[in-house]
Image (cartoon, rainbow, N blue to C red; front, top):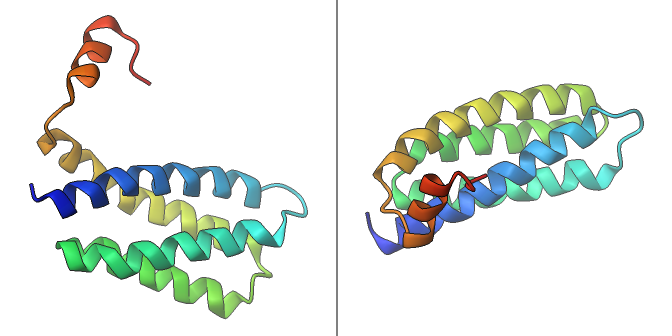
Length: 118
């Protein structure tokens, strides 16, 4: 796996986790507008970089959701959270097979053996 692709995958895991947090925030009563804005920003980054490293389906899914959020003008938090949750399924389907291909760092192998991996 190329260094650029590996870096994208590592960053994507962080973005995926943050989007999961933002879904939870958006499902609360009166969520802050900043949660939707942050989700849109993360999706924009994924859409802009995924295709350039060969993950076009992921990038396209992120772009479609980004455009949906823009069309909602940040008002329908429930619909945005539902679509974002569906995107996370796509993201997870992307992450799982890639994780199997990534070489593990020595500390990752230790964490699996010792049971301390999160």
